[in-house]
Image (cartoon, rainbow, N blue to C red; front, side, top):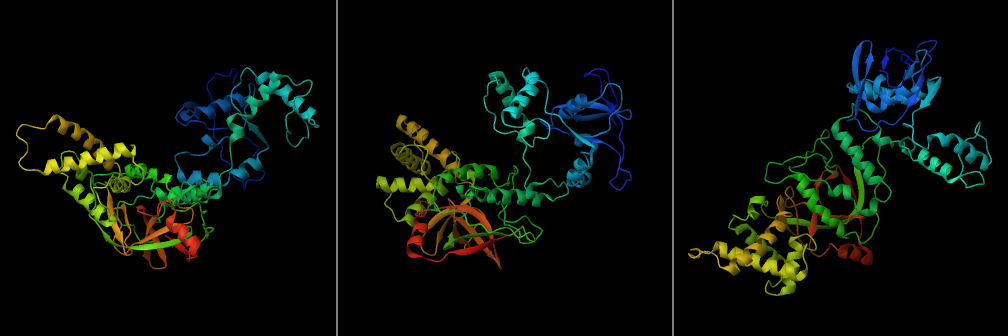
Length: 471
């Protein structure tokens, strides 16, 4: 019950009243519809003698609907729902349509007045009359036309009116309807499925690219499905953090392993939303995986043994001559999961100095006179190269497949895992068979298929596709 006040800025006072749809007769109340805005901007009102902290937007709405001479019984969500009780919030949100439908009237608070507010009433009258209807009984505003009596100021008033936040609200899809009792893993799952099923998701299954397992995915039904990202900052404790990898692999959006095919995602079965069904191609099976690269392996104070071993192993697996500039460029492109940040000439120069730097660090004994000017210049170039590698490789493993393909992916992969390209997926993914389902482990960079080569072969030769059931 909102108590009366003489002036707009007077403090807000009210009393809570409990009501039920089972009451007969049902208490007569009005509902208030408004936009919450930022929850960080706060205000207060006094309820039954207690000062209550509320969003400033709800306080503004209450001031505008408050009467001068008598109390007014209203329902407003920020106050009539206990925002600190998840169970109550879930129950009341589910009843929201009934709450608004059962009120004797509804008040819409569109926001505070502007300089054009005084013209809105007249502009609406003119708009309706010029489009062949009157204000009373008209079912909607037609297209606004600039008739004889409609001035530019009226048009501006209408424009400002219909661009207020209240008109831009959209009904939430079923998967995203608030349920404060829903487990966190289900919130993540439903958000991921909603994003995957959005029109235009053929942009590359980017949601799946944000999956970053830092440990073996669990197989229990209570665990978060393997294809669902965990959108929270989390340090894995192994020298690299998951969000760093997400930022690193965003460069993969430049790839086109899907060869412009469209995502083929099967509709969700309501009885098991944990299962994601996607069509794609089986490419190969991983037969060998290196140690996990840590950030420390790429630090400037390290002797570079592991990095030199990585470079030598990539050269060996790709079967190229590292003395040939084009071959060295091919290796650099692989190491940086796509086109490096520098030009080809600059990349080759930095790569060359980096290899010299590694050899110099491993030379014993060191030069007693200290580094020469050329060595110092080379060290700076090598440092640039190391920083770029450190943005890609920590937390990853180099792998090879049964048919000789070479790639790298996140640490959780192991021999026996499967390399897959989904329709609409810009990058390959690594899956692990788990009975009748697969687990999604990581996206991958694989030499020779990042530009759609494997998908084009499939389209030309008619090799069969598969339906993969992820869980």
